[in-house]
Length: 201
Image 1: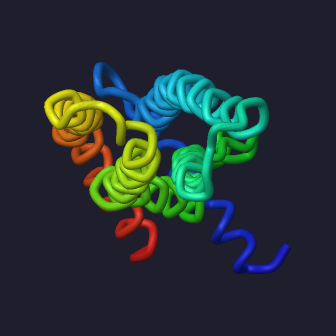
Image 2: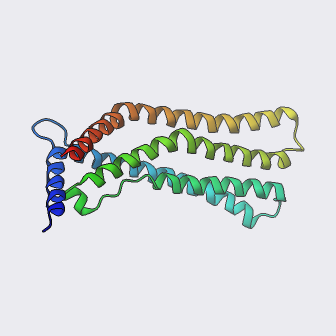
Image 3: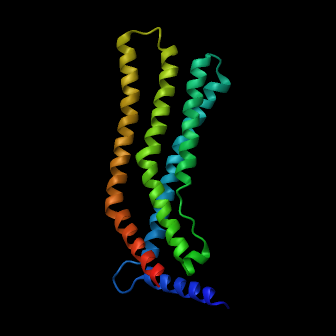
C-alpha cells in the first residue's frame, strides 16, 4: 500500500473518531444523519404538495379547452417553476454511502458543507425566484379569465393570491432561518474546523 493511501486511510479513521464524539458530547456524524432524515421527510411533503399543484395545472391544460395562448403560457410557466423547485430541493440532499458512515473522509465533509451552502442559496435566491415565476404565471391567467368581473373582485383575487404566496414564503423562511441559526451554523462551524485540522495533518 502506497504512503498516500495509508495517509488517507488514517485521516478517515481520525475523522470517524472526531465525528463520533465522546461522553455526553453529541456525535457530529449522527447529527448530520438525523438532520438529513428530517430534511428528506420535509422534502417529501413539499414535493407531494408541488406534485398536486403540477397535476392541477396539467389537468387544465390537457382536459379543458378554455385556455388561450396567454393563459397556456402562464400555466406552463407555473409548471416549469414547480419542476425546477423540486429538482432544486432534491439536489441539496446529502448522499450517504456506506463507506461515508464507516470511514468518513475529508471529501464527505466537504460535500456536506457544499449541500448546506446550496440549501442556504436555495432559500435566499432560488425559492423567491420560483415564487415570482408562479406569481407572474398566475397574473397571465388572471388577466384573461378575470376580465369580466368588477375591479373590486379582481383586486381581491389578485391580493389574496399574492398574499398567500408571500405568507407561505415568510413562514417557511423564518423557520429555516431559525433552524439555520440553531442547528446548521454550529454544525457548519464544527465541520470546517475538522476539515482544517485534517488538511493540516
